[in-house]
Length: 449
Image (cartoon, rainbow, N blue to C red; front, side, top):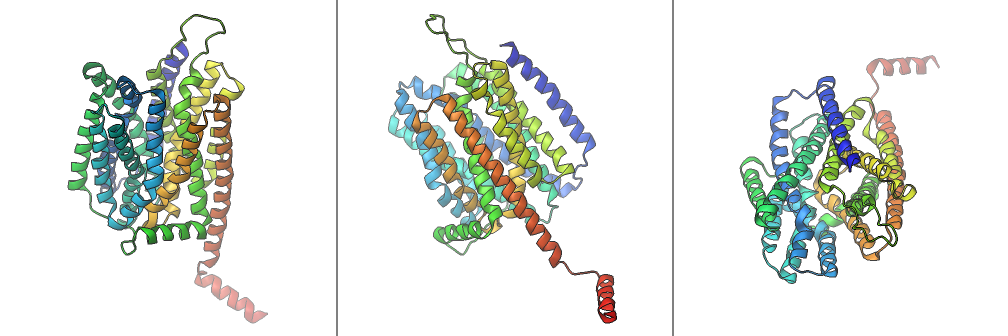
């Protein structure tokens, strides 16, 4: 147990040191208008994430307390991923046509409705809640970012400041996750497993009110219907290999990440010795989860440092490869708690770098008019990966081998994206007009010839 507590303490000190260093060593954006915009977005985004984090720790416990069988609980979880997979692209198209702000308000309504269903000990009502939650999740991971990027471009802020927003969002999200876990546990202990969902409902209500009074509306393509937006999104993916690469990287990395969330507990729990009657040793889930969140915060600070010295398309190749190697630890060192834990901390650090990096690259390459549709389109293979792995009932070693394979494929896609970006950049440079002095020199040389 000491390795988990010690790991959390060491990581906390390292995280604080990195945060202070990046705040002092790196130049910050001094534009007051930009800071106001960033604050308005982050308040809403972090409230939205808090509404999600408050529910996560006690979903399984609530279903179990209602007497649901293991199979029923598995079906409910798969229904959430399936709902996100089936309805995601349609919801994304609605965001592009009818407004990202309206879609974010819809997120609060749908997820709030999902919280209400948790009061009923009825499989079909709980299933409805999972379906609503799946749709809400698709909105959470597309419409909020689409609104922010569109507003960022529309207001003419510097492109580099986009990475600053994403990095601060990851940092804030990790803090919110830790705080939400503590709040949820406190309310669950005092009032029962359904109480955290009531707290989440309150947070989502506040978030919705803040959006109504602080956000302006923006759109993608308002002219076409959802089928036309879907077609336009596919056309953009087909015509630009960089968008395709981004989508594949997102699906492969996030698919591995969601599988990891489900598998880290058994991977770190010591196995009972054959023939032993001793109770299986438990692990401090709270300390481990907190250590993971601090690792993500460290990753967000590392992203800022890396962005200062090189471009995101380049360093993400190393990050994705490192993530793949880190998840080989439960395969190669199975049963070695310390090494596996260190591997998982490295992976979470890569997650902290991945989120702002992916957001910044999407801000560069994904067109504004179909942004939400494209982002949700790539959640289809993501959810297929997770559902496919969950339904196979595979051994833990095989599951992590699949994750490593997915991450290696993501690394190859990142190399493809890097090459495509370099080629595109060199083409744009060749198209730039020559300075007048250079034109005169070329003309003079031509006459001499």
